[in-house]
Image 1 (spheres, rainbow, N blue to C red):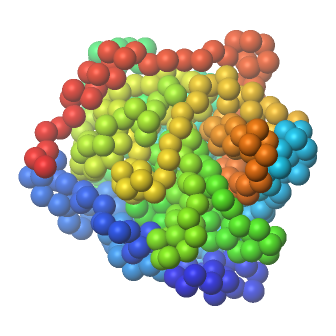
Image 2 (image 1 turned 90 degrees about the horizontal axis):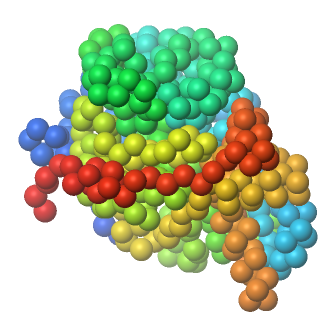
Length: 454
């Protein structure tokens, strides 16, 4: 990818290519391993779950990956997404900082997730796949894949983490409106789900359990593939349209960010905004602070161990080296359901180990306070996940005020909170509480990490 981002956009400013940060890494990320042999996995190992086109993107080394025209045709419905300067928030904070946000809530599903749902559905259709199984936390990924499945004629089954299934009925209704089937996880439909329910009939669920259910279904059926909404390399790749557009838009505004911020659960929206800027830095461009923000109740980057682990609770997936809290870790039921994953994307984790990004964690009440402040200044109600980034941005802006220094801050406002109103109702009623995981549970989960020789 040229450092002149404009050459990657068409006349409507829509990117022609996704950006693959693997091409610019100073050292390659550790390989994905087969859990039985501990040898690096090959395409044949992944073929039961993904179409070959996505497998090749997962291991791609080239810097530019062309976006298929049918995908770009769908993207045009909301891309390029707008970049705004948060002038009213700046005034409310009385800060010399200049704050910009990339607004991904304009997509049909209301978040950044269709950026990868659409190409995943497209590639599956091209491979003749008629059914896709997947998991979802807060429901943003599930509703996005349901939307994409409707466009490309694919049946979608979504295993939704039970606590979110109960907390967010409107997100569930949106999936069903698009034609998907939504199942509370853990469920009785799979061996993975039944095993969990046998141990605890009232289990709140986790993304790791929901992944196990979706992977099990795909692995057992010839007509079904699996789709993941975060973590994997090809998912992060698709999200880089966000950062590519943002680089162009920041240049049009005559500004350049000193600090780039994104919330992190599995890592996809963070990678989307950050990777193009990091790539330019790795190719000799200016250095920036890149800040990943996560929930204190599920702190994979700030408390997790960098180790090989399973991506799911049922241990049906390959082993990836990532910051992990342990595949059996079940976080408490805080409202940012999209950030409840036990692990972090291997590429994001690798960048953290290389010292190229920093991470911080916040409690639930602090991020909702920030989200309300943002909404009252800018008029946009963020999703609970996005509130984590908002909190960090406000803190950075207040630090600029304290020091009397001007910084340019860019963050990804990855989705709206219109389906999360119960969380805001609970916040205003004083019912929302800061939730903590049990240290003993974390220790037990980390003690169960698979043994992989150095």
